[in-house]
Length: 152
Image (cartoon, rainbow, N blue to C red; front, side, top):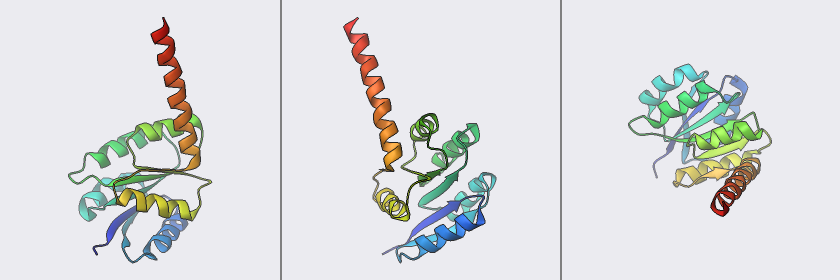
């Protein structure tokens, strides 16, 4: 069985090393490289051709959206699992609308990361409970808006 190549991106050395130790414990996954900043991602993505990018997101802003766009524009776009440090509704909606395959929040535990990696490896998606709740609330809001529009 071929190993799934994973790129870990975080400005925190401790987080990168912890993620490497956790993920490399699985024989079918291999953290092929790490990037300390978003600026180094494009180069490493092209060089290492990862299957999955695990991305630590301290702040959801235009830089985040540009990074996701660039990753998805790669010749062989990797699956993207976001580790969001923000769990407010606006940030999570922006993350979910960016087209990522997995979203975890600061309250997520290691088992959720493992489940997320397993899911995106098979082409599925994974959302932590906080992201699922926000997505469902947004869907309900939109559905109510559509119902009101149809009644008029």
